[in-house]
Length: 167
Image 1 (cartoon, one colour):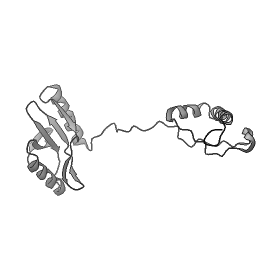
Image 2 (cartoon, one colour; image 1 turned 180 degrees about the vertical axis):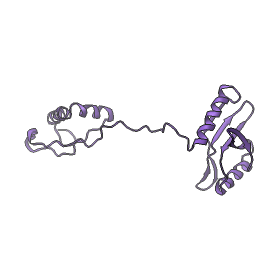
Image 3 (cartoon, helix red, strand yellow; image 1 turned 135 degrees about the horizontal axis):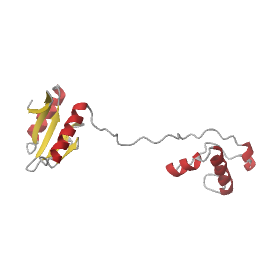
Image 4 (spheres, one colour; image 1 turned 30 degrees about the horizontal axis):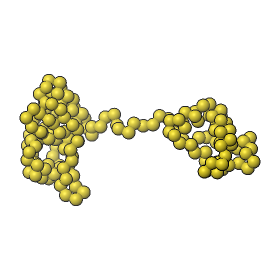
């Protein structure tokens, strides 16, 4: 007798019947997820022919990826990342990260700059903005003042060209 109240012989027969009735999908689900949940009570007298086997509660679709394929929040950030990739390829910058750093401003208040850029001589923080918003501007100015060892800059696209500006 197993800890969950099923004896091994009955459980093996039950799993075999599930495997046959689902066309082999049951075994694949158990192997992929490591989970086995019947949702049925043990039948009296181990009569497998009286057990009604309904649909498997687990979905047969492929699991969704944990990390989204496109992690950028908007098209401007996606375009700027492409621009930074070109700069890495041309060896004008060493590397960059998207929303990799977080700066604590107050309790439960953080600022996550768009890009952390590593150049040959310094670390830079790049913000991609189309328009200035008050909450963002307050956080940006606070971080620029309290973390002066980074070079803080904002960029915007004007007629297809990235331009730096200071708000």
